[in-house]
Image (tube, rainbow, N blue to C red; front, side, top):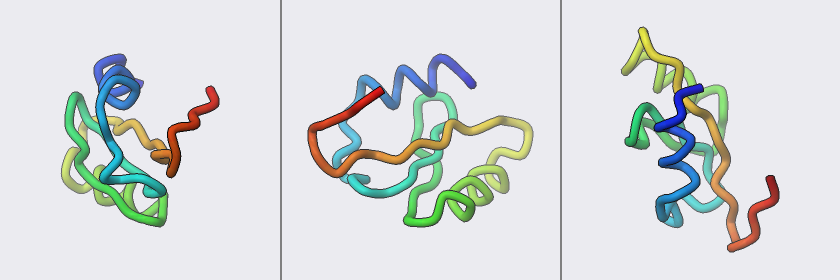
Length: 65
């Protein structure tokens, strides 16, 4: 996992993706949706030589790590 991708996920407002899966490459959301596998596959098509960070954005302000 890329530290930049994780830092981006933790430190940015991703509320527009609440309840969705996101794929992050570097400091950019490159795919989002309801199905983790589809989101991951879309990100890999766009960036075949990178490993995207796949995460689900919580619906509320609660985030348990």
